Image 1 (cartoon, rainbow, N blue to C red):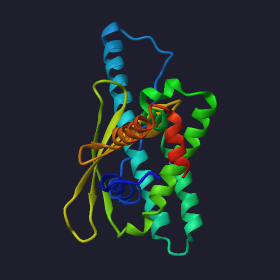
Image 2 (tube, rainbow, N blue to C red):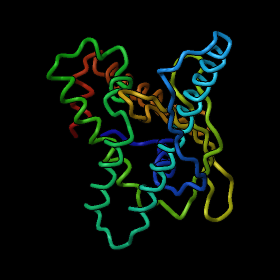
Image 3 (tube, one colour):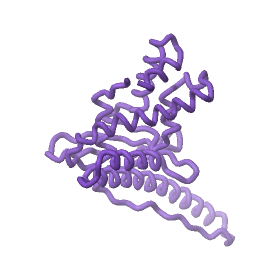
Length: 228
């Protein structure tokens, strides 16, 4: 069975802590019917682009705030049993994370060589892996907070990198966490988390590649590993 490393354990903290940052997403509006001089039209275009950019940043930050709020909610509620917490966590993953994109990235170049049946089973097993790994770590939560420090657009694509800090309840050293957020079909979804500069998606891909390579390059080796 796949075993999480020390770095991956920090993701749980990032997922299940309270945010101390508040910034609602911006709503955009505009008058499409009016005619304007070219100079004013250019100024308006620049403003709209600026508004779109800010809305992208604000929407991404709002997503992380929501993840933190929901996470701390079900972790702090002592009336919830393990099954209910697991159910809440599954809902959080489905609502806020692009699990298909994350899973496909983790499989890397081996994705193309798999059959449709293998892809389907892999995605199911991958989702179950994430749930199993992090629900087992719920008891590690100890009142940490998450502070969203800002956001920037990735220069290489339309992804947004949301910067945050995990603040220990005991006042210890803060941990830097960056969330890669992607907007798809009008919805914001997390596609990667980096803890102290270490990408979880890349770490997972490396781990999976090692399992496949030890199995002679056959994806079936990974599937068998995940079934355990």
